[in-house]
Length: 304
Image (cartoon, rainbow, N blue to C red; front, side, top):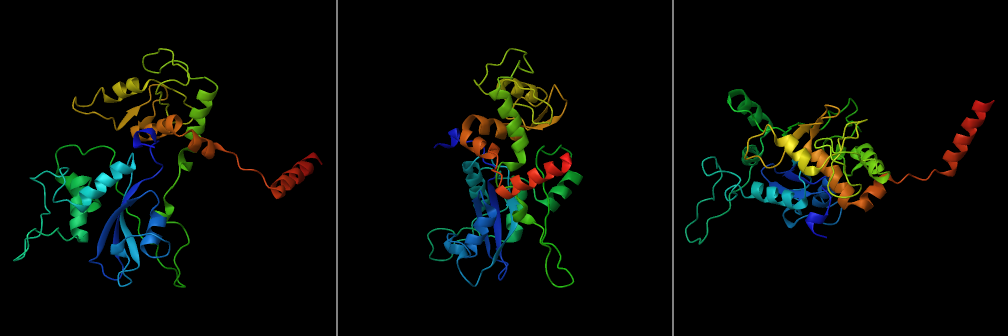
């Protein structure tokens, strides 16, 4: 199946690993499942990479995670750019800070630059923005920063008095790995289309053909506003510079709520391209005999 016929993935991330035994050792990769991939790099599960297989470097830890990619190809392109900051065209020549290492005597080619945590974070700032560099840049930069970039920090929980760490999920272990977080949104849109309640386009007011074309829906609870994709796009881009191709956000004309464009496109592509994923997400779990007995007992007590 080609990338164009797949829904936007629930998660696809670019990660930066650091060896806990040798902090100078850095590895960059991408994955749809960070916890599983970390286990592979650490030899707990099969897989991983040759560069991370040395016992002298294990265990590895995830120190940076970049998410929000619309496809595995987009994530791989970003991974390549972060791995090859001296070559990528996404960093301008004027801003480039990483260059090839000078050739040694007798070498035909110059060596690739050696990664360090400082160099990775610096180049990451040139591509999207690192936390401290981003905060400092905001203080002195006169232009408005690009909307939609969110940078958070999530460190390992402190050890308790008995020397054990909190059992609460943190870091990559707290990431949503499936579409469960948008289940109510998916279910709402699914029911509207199933019962042909699309109505008229919220923007141009023309009747929407049920089950035909690309018709995004507002993600906010209680709002079933739908419209043509190009109408939503024109609405979102009306106040943006002419060179802007893709919207980052918009406001729903019906409920007035702010909409992240990527969230709306994730639901739309899942609805149009991923019927099996939708069916799996909305499938009701079978009740066990124990649950049925408990419910019957509760009903009997209410009748008394």
